[in-house]
Image (cartoon, rainbow, N blue to C red; front, side):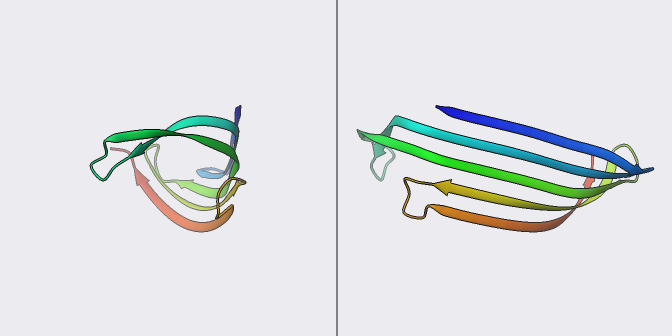
Length: 104
């Protein structure tokens, strides 16, 4: 079984300045048949795989619109992965980044 939840937010604080936010949560639990491949990417067998994981992505930022198609944003996001079937079962990543976008 799997579940995906997604939500987004955009709120204009002042003219051309927006607060943006978003969240995605994915969880999956179950099993699947995977392929085993050789060095030439040929299928040589099959194996049963078990999954039990959850991923979360949270985003918060500010976006300034110069025009309808040109904007600059400052964003931070946090990514959490919890995989109960992997040797490296937890991963957290925090990022802050600037983005200048032009839609031509």
